[in-house]
Image (cartoon, rainbow over all chains, first blue to last red):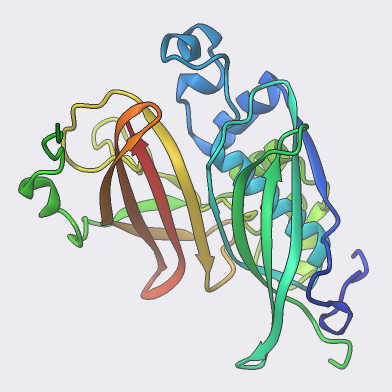
Length: 145
Length: 156
């Protein structure tokens, strides 16, 4: 089992989470369609996407949500847990580009025996436009326990 | 000139009404497929023995995965965000995803899900008039609520 990298005591407000970058080509979007069950054609059929007025295929919003979940998991594993992840899809990410996931700690506290960390999270385009702003709540282990 | 509202009393009456439950299954293969699509390398999501060593009942559902509806062509049941009424719109966009977890969800879990329309608004957007609905899905294992999913859908 991988060692715990981050403990509750290590975390400070304003701290950045290690970012995660995923290149979203059509193969990635098809894998996501199969895994999620979302077969809406704007994500893998260029002709269909353009017939609805889009310039090209777009990355599934829920894939960006899941990528942010992976970023959090990889930061807090193996002992931390994602308790909440809420995002809004404000801008589109086009196929064949990087989706860059980022997060910053906004608050830490203990409640009902749990070590809670709240974060601001988002995805951005290669140009730095934030297309998926959101927030997250995770729990972390304590060095003492 | 003000546009007439696209939200009718009949549509509004659906707010807060809970659906019949549908059944979703979480299994090992679908957890692995989901993890692979998102690019996870942690063996937790692929190797059941590793998951058990780490205190899970089986491979856990990666964040964002809440199982798939059990498909039966004789009794189709769908778990989509679309509100339960007709609208004049043909195009849809996902507006947002909010998932709260209360318990670990693992392969082998059979969950029941009820859906409820919780909010409805109309807006003039760059793409014309839009209907924005928020649907809440409550996931239970037995009587225990394990997760709550709120999905925002934009129809235009």
